[in-house]
Amino acid sequence: AQTVTQSQPEMSVQEAETVTLSCTYDTSESDYYLFWYKQPPSRQMILVIRQEAYKQQNATENRFSVNFQKAAKSFSLKISDSQLGDAAMYFCAYPAGGTSYGKLTFGQGTILTVHP
Amino acid sequence: DTEVTQTPKHLVMGMTNKKSLKCEQHMGHRAMYWYKQKAKKPPELMFVYSYEKLSINESVPSRFSPECPNSSLLNLHLHALQPEDSALYLCASSQDSGLQETQYFGPGTRLLVL
Image (cartoon, rainbow over all chains, first blue to last red; front, side, top):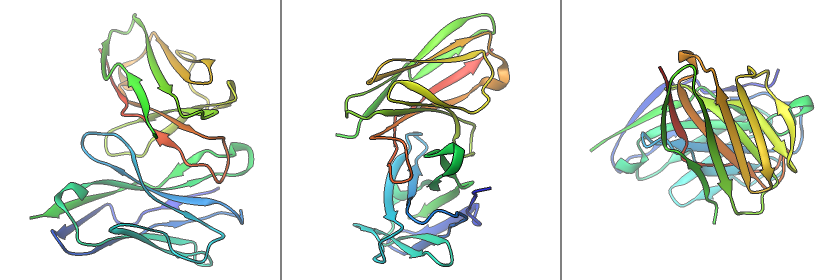
């Protein structure tokens, strides 16, 4: 079974500091994307960043970057210069293969609290 | 523009009611999805439409009936729901279905079944 694991149910960070959210996944596919989504209390699921598995270079979007370790099947999200607006639930996600081709499999989520 | 819209934002219905949720996108995407999400849990896939045809049904009870009238519109018809069906219902779309596709989500419909 293809799974996504987020081992940190909750994390907290001080404003302006850096925090890293972890994610591991299991797949037999060789070419795929990985995603981090953010869901604030306002509830809309927003794409934060995506990584193409065949690319060695880690993806970066402004203050958000990933540490992608394909062999270890690890995909962590680093948030630099944390802001109050970063407070949300963060989901790591991976599209399944096989008979559920393209179905997004989500981790259980990490609730991020940002302290002023 | 990566906008997916959903109506209504909130819905309260009795167990004997019939209601519908609507989702719309104008990005030319050919895959559309319905998810159900309980509080503090990840979304659970319900249905996938690819090129206006139902491609995945995740063993969803028949009281949920999806419909894709055209490539931009996705409906979810609700009938005889149970209180445990109360949840946030999210719609998403992507260019196509596959391992290299990015799904964009709408704001959701908060459903309460009394």
